[in-house]
Image (tube, rainbow, N blue to C red):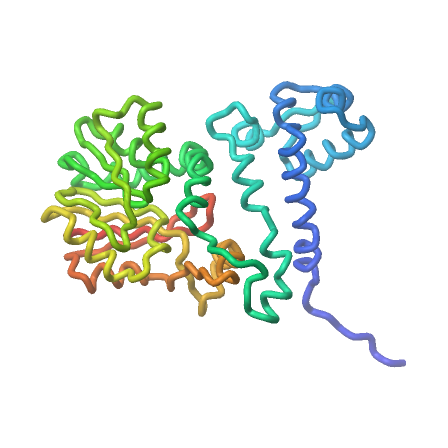
Length: 335
């Protein structure tokens, strides 16, 4: 009798990959149908179906599936949001991330994945990162910063030994300015400048006014690749913006020159690659669509820290942080 083949590897990971799109589709459908808006309090499937105008039977099956992936809880036949859905998927909350989810899962580029791999050219002309397109994302950036990113960065910056003596800071590529504003609020007297592209800072001004920080926060519009970023700073923060640098050494030198003696440059960057640019998985996959279109934003891990030392910073301390966006590199340089 012929011996049966012995297999020592499980194909479970392949099955998980096939199921993953179902999970994301459930999330996106829940957002589009505004299901989570209905479930801050326990409700039946029939009540939800009536409220959003859907089929009662299929709504129940859909809600059961949302409960299966822990976006809902079900008890005694009634459904309600899980904690993550309540905080991030209910529209009237400041931390609402529904629009972000819809933007991230815009697979219009990845639909062309076989074509891009085979032919190496984008299916349609145009640039991925025009100033106008980036400005459209400012409100979404604000939501993520309010949803925990600002709290993370404030915790890092406020623990710096020099923090109490800081008088002036620059949030480089600061987008809506929520992180920069949160840092200023954590300091009794420090003032700040939010630097970003001109269309972006026009929107930033509205956030500054909303949080009544006009007397402590200003904006400066420009492209840090070619324009002045000001001078006389005690702290410069670059939070996930250096991927847009055309020449990283040139930008780091510009930052060095803009700092006062003894000033601190803090870079928080989510695009550091390891293992011959194949890890971390989250980072590689997150960058894939834009990289296929000719905008590869990834740096090898340690690239920014090396540039800091090359430019002349006296000391550089680096570590990796676990964030909702995957592992981020934190580099703190002192002039």
